Length: 103
Image (tube, rainbow, N blue to C red; front, top):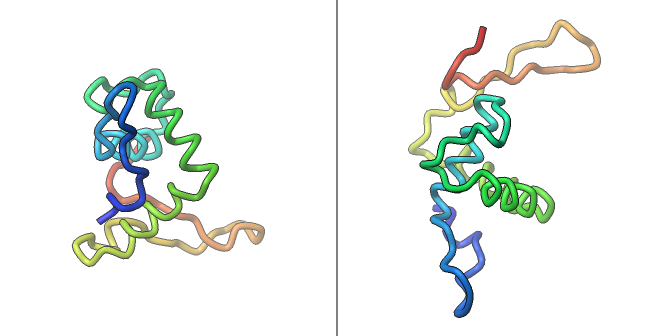
């Protein structure tokens, strides 16, 4: 679904980290709002995940990943994100992620 967005592995150097784990780690951070250093080890080293987040955010890859995930028919769009009218005139919508809630 998104594997074609990543550059192919280089023939020299360290083997690349699993890109799915990296994307899951980025989504975990964006969903929880936790500091990068609190990223669970199952997603890989937090520094690697942050470096790729920073790189992908800068070159537009992260936007492409999120767009493809949002447009996938396998994902229920109502659960992915819903827009609520905002009480603030400068912000027309408030976006709420329905996968978790924080108090």
